[in-house]
Length: 275
Image 1 (cartoon, rainbow, N blue to C red):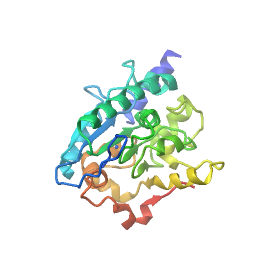
Image 2: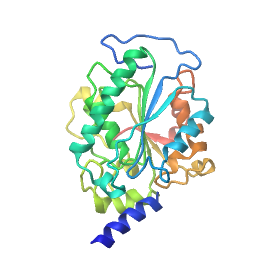
Image 3: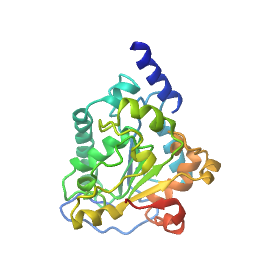
């Protein structure tokens, strides 16, 4: 059994996103350089000297012209990949509640500045739980999920109430971690759903939602991996979305208010809404 867990840990490492959180949203004009903050949540086992995929995201944002703050939030257990991935929902929600409070604190001192969330792999679960932990009057602008190891059928209704613009889910059928290992260890939200994982399928709208919740799901944009992404270093693997060139070209425009935030409207072949 110890050899099995070592194999899982080693294999995962190897294979391996204008808001104002105020009671009255303040309308602040988009000014060059006023890009606010990106809170980044790395994947299981991430944030260390060797496996810090946030470095690539930060470098790509800078290359793409993002001029705001980049804050990597450490939510991991410190016990390794498997312990992080398989940590309980309660643990992840406790870490998310701390980040939610930090977001509130940030916007109290930076009223009107954009706040965005970017998550990788198991960090995407903490990102969703962070949204759910925010007060209903507190919204973030854009959420970007890379290699999301959440059940594709997870109900996003509460989280989407705190998303002002859109929630982008970058998917890839070539993701070996999500396709081979997560079905064994379970998703980050502790479901055993086979390959029905958001990072492969995109999020799927639950069938029993009311009309208002169904409308909110229009914020969910599933962005599908394409061969052209390989030119920017994203070859469809689990951490391909953190490659600096890919981040600069495909993620940064979503996070710059004065940039082409509707870029995927020009490329309908890449995206789909939930079904």
